[in-house]
Amino acid sequence: MRARLLDPGRWLGAHLGLVLLFLYLPIAVLIVLSFNESGLPTAWTGFSTRWYESVVVNEKILGAAAITIVIAAVSTLIATAIGTLLALGLERLTNNALLDGLVFVPGIIPDIVLAIALLSFYNLVFTGLLGLKLGLWSVIVAHVVFNITFVTAIVRTRLRHFDISIEEASLDLGANEVTTFRKITLPVILPGVIAAALVAFTLSVDEFVVAFFTAGTTITFPIQVYSMIRFGVTPEINAIATVVVVVSFVLVLASQRLNPEQV
Image (cartoon, rainbow, N blue to C red; front, side):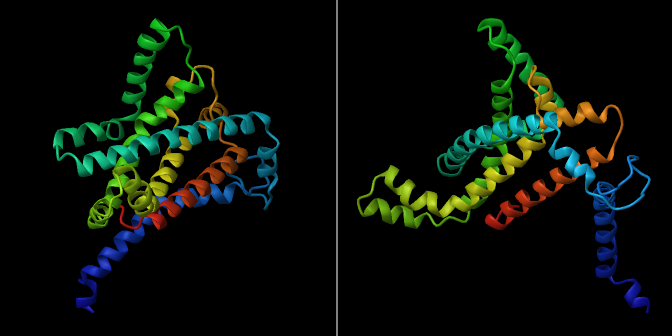
């Protein structure tokens, strides 16, 4: 009995269970309350899907969601293209720790710092010199900046398991670098690229702080939710949060399935 109590595996399992409970119990409560028939966010009065129906017919929420999807899709395409090429360059052409650190800075520094830096840059260069106003384009560029970091990191994990001898064989057989990349390299690393794109899309959809500082008059989905929650948490907010949680979970799970090598 004493040996069982002192078993490290039991303690580690109990610790893991408590951590998971701490992380996911609030989310589980939120999901349950999103089906609450009552207009009060914490008083359960019965099961209902009325708040999901309310979200579906809310034009402000749907409009903000459409803008967010456009921003996420465009920024993901750009960040995935740039991040994939950057990963290839860092993995194949250089071994510079300083350069590696610089690439990962946008993903490490606090969002508020990145947001203020981007806003200052926009005001100085684009608004001050070019007369452009903050809006859809400024949010897209901002999302590209931090998404490049995550795309680069994920694609590099795929490249580390890449057998470079098949590229060398392709070049020896007469194919040029472009053909080798298109027919050999890209198909092999494509699961990692798709996984990186899914993560980038998820981060872009969920991002609030950077968008809040750089959006101007553009209302993204997180900004719209923030404007609603300022007046109190309602079951409608719980329904919105549940949808976001489910979508984010599915996208992250898909990215892990596509790129099992990523850490």
